[in-house]
Image (cartoon, rainbow, N blue to C red; front, side, top):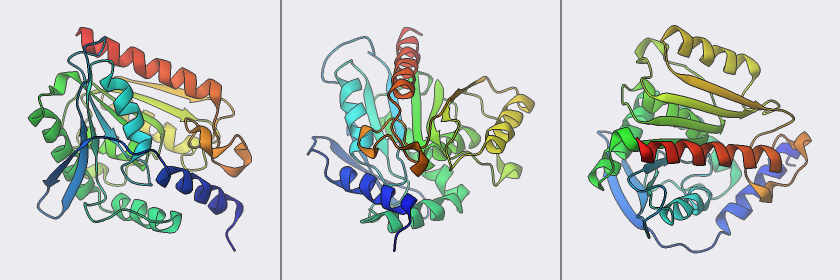
Length: 260
């Protein structure tokens, strides 16, 4: 029998795979160890995000509608978006249990996670994006992927996490992050403790990384996804106020990048 948290995750997964069909270009890329398939969404018109590139690092469910819906929104404002894949081109979880297994797998292989994200950034550049105008947005395990891209030595405009998994299991191989970092986290997120946030703040302070932490009150994991419901006791809950603030902050960061 699934527990309360697992049952709620199952609802998230059902909504995820039931998303609308979308038009995007599939891009295959590889590291020395694996093949990956990401999705490129090109600007549909000129707007306030002209010249900006957005690199999405997917949540534990894998690359899909959660990222592509934002990519299309930003495309209408002039941005180029790439939804990275760091699971593998033949790895698309079909249920929450598989998704958890894949998320744990990539968390335990940080060198490959960094390599996959570096190659994804290379695809952004190949599509016409510029690193200095690229904003990386990572959710859940994708938050870790976004941070590890920075730890790989790559520099972009800004790295943003939303309800990200924050950890540093290989500090001995981590470079100081040179990009601006913004952490948008819930204060009751069961996947990221206050101790984890304190630890990453300590890392950033020691390395003189420019960063900001926004800790939303009474806010759980997946707080930007309306279909998860609003019962924070499950650990997964939409929070309208926190989601709007996060969206507004990200929009401001993107507009600022466009003007630089």
